[in-house]
Image (tube, rainbow, N blue to C red; front, side, top):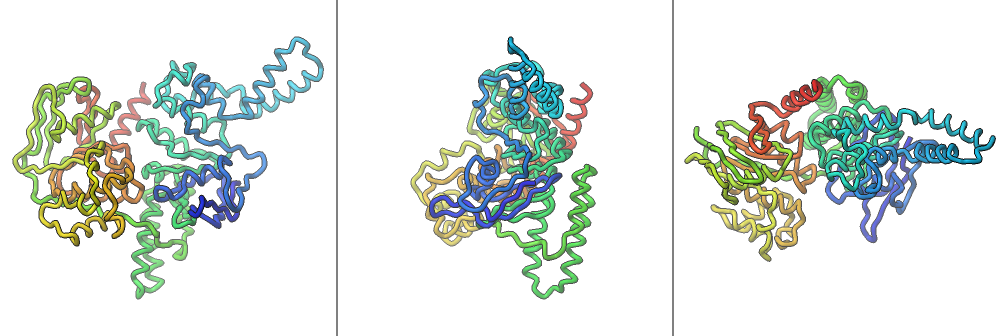
Length: 530
């Protein structure tokens, strides 16, 4: 077991959290969530011993092995991929090296023989004989081809390095597994494999992630880092979000009887449990949810921006026709037509290809050949990923938003928009050229909403956003009555928004009206048949 006793951390005059008393038990996966800067990754570093708390203590049971996902991709440049994975089990490596050194001695004696026998017992107990094959299995599951297993880490592509370090953290069946953003830079199939691995993992997992689909699939509990406290809740991210929203509604309904509230909670849990998958972890999760009582659910202190895209006019029958569009080095001979209710997600191994396509369709870049034509009823706007050009001016946010407000330029109107995007009265006077990445994206979303466009292009819109903003954006995209052309690394967003998938590998290799989940299942089925 891993637990904290009165744990606290303070940097100078800033308190991240205090009086944290939590026990993390075997068989559970804990998703650690919180606003950007709340201290999620810092909390993991305290648990791993990388940094010291300013109060309290971390208790780890004796003989418990903890494994941590390393973030430094260059730390193992002098080792092969397979050796880097093995290095995830330090004690096994120590035994292997001592064992080899003893057997290599020219003056091997009786004492050496006794020590070697002892080491052989420890080696076998740690499954040392299967260590390399186990490491290779992990690499294969994460999509690292066998041809790279003996390649030095220094010579590997960064996307492969990420997978090797992830395999290292999973190697050797650790008792405690700490993962900080494990799905970052993973392709869809590798992320899917990791989800399945963790859902069947018997020990304790703590994970920080902005990937809601991942948190929903693997988590049995949510640890909410909020307002200097860390509270733990049963269920996955979706359950935490929905129950916190339910608790907020019930808190406003002072006259509703306790019996009515209990019934509402029971009905909600029944509906939620019915949608759980049949995995072993989902079964234990369902049992835990059945034990929840009214006092267990609490309103969240989280604030969500209000994102609502409202087109000024309905789009007509002709929306967009693309014919043989080519931009050398990015894509060739791309052709497609958009239907009236299409919400298209573009996928590619080369994200720059999709960025260039969206830039061409938005008129920012010019294609080398081919053509495209927007319908006469179309008004379109673009949430561009590289937005730095929009934030060069030394103006405050009120004046920045005013640039994009066509109908009403009064300060009251502008402040209303900034407020709905969680900029306070004081923050409205912040200069546009000093904003953080997340603040810039919230401003760009305000610009798009004020355009009242009926076709919206979005290039990786969740970049730099916290979970609350991602959740709000997701809901806004679902509700939007116009057309969407977008790309994203957020599985949940693609799953719930897209009704058509277009895959680009130099040219279009796949174009189908299909959900993302069905597309991945088809892809997984093809991979398994190889």
